[in-house]
Image 1 (cartoon, one colour):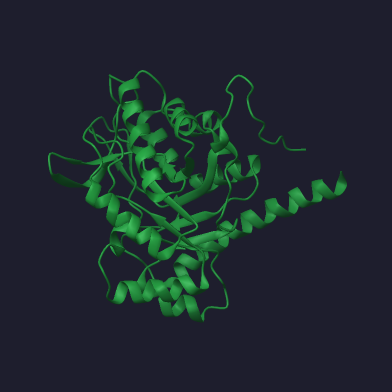
Image 2 (cartoon, rainbow, N blue to C red; image 1 turned 30 degrees about the horizontal axis):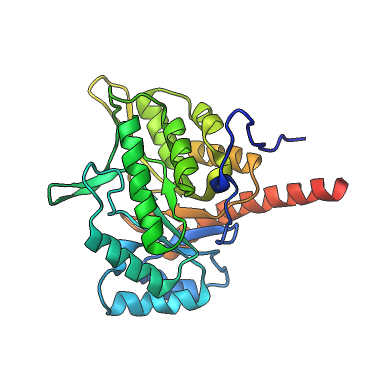
Length: 306
């Protein structure tokens, strides 16, 4: 019989550890308007759709008409990429106000953002840049999350990053840093398993060790995506979080490991570059659904046997 996750008494958890899950525990897909007709006509009903908030910050037009139509039929998750929660500067109040407008308009089942920064001195960088894991950064990130949750009037999810370098200034592990954020702010977590694999490979640690120490009970959504393989200057493997190809088999194995420890969770297939036709994304979602269904059946069998 498989062991189920139990709260660690040495690490007392807060209300965020057993978060209310609003999305269905099925596979979802990042919504691209070119897929709308195929999604609506498909006998396969995707579990939910997710969009980047910044793509819907305009006042109207075709993007809003399409998303309004899809929202009628599907649960929705809104994923932000531009709040710059880890920035040394304060949050941009105009960007936060635009995010609130999108959230109020579509009333999504979940709202999420990244543990990263992307703005400095009035400039926006089209990247999700890492932060040092120290007390000063922790306090700043928690303050920013509190501001966002207060402005939106709801809990958000925070996504673990994919990283390519570390900071000498860091005084704690990434998992301890993220655990502390969840405890202090009450936010939930979005576990990007591809990011775990990418970062573990780039930094030379074991992805399973990372997941063992990750506060899984805080997780309300999972992301899966593809990555590109390269080499660094020393000839060592370097993985790039590219979102432009199918999920790697090693990432699927890690996903099985996580679902084995928890109940089925909403799981998004991310594919943002070189976007294929809908049937390709659908096959990835069906693979995730098959894993979720298998573990749900196993859990149901255990409950029946007891």
